[in-house]
Figure 1 (cartoon, rainbow, N blue to C red):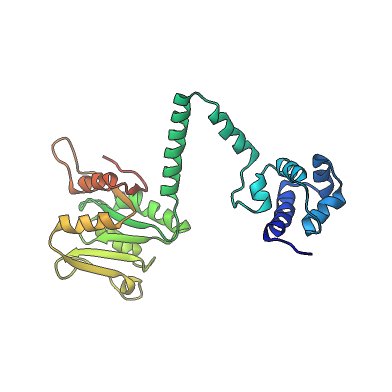
Figure 2: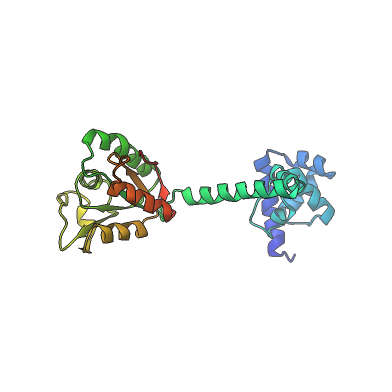
Length: 257
């Protein structure tokens, strides 16, 4: 018997989705007006259903016919399709608002998906940050990220946040880039029995601005808190936070202003 790729996919998808929905062959058969033995033959690829029966099967399983027969990889659940149809019935102005909200949510969701391969996290903050504040605002978020991801970190070589972050990461990951001004870092942690020997040490920047600009352009995400700014003074940390946001970098934990 000659069997097309779509016929094979239909048979496989039918069996998988039926079981996922919790239907026996007999239960599905009753929903579409046939008998269990026929559903079994569909699933084994021995016979093909008519378009009418295939459509009824798709409706009973709450998926699109395109998905069931293998011409689409997307499972369109019946409840979702109903919502889309409801949106189509809205007045144009309300429809535009709903679609805009959906677009914004989907963009935000996609941007914030934490994956193993696309996270370059710039960690920065105040040079006078206390150890207690570092533990509270940086350590816990960083350890939480490590539970689900294996990101790359970008750290500069100043005091406070930078040096404390190096000390935290030295035994956790080789995926670190240290950026420094001039020929050598002002601070680097011990390489003995740590991951530091595998870190990327990148220097030659002429000043803080050039170094920080490189870091911001290179990162996809950032973690930063600012405790130094007030109505009279904007700290370098706050300036970098603002630049990250302007460039649509993802703030993983927010910041304190």
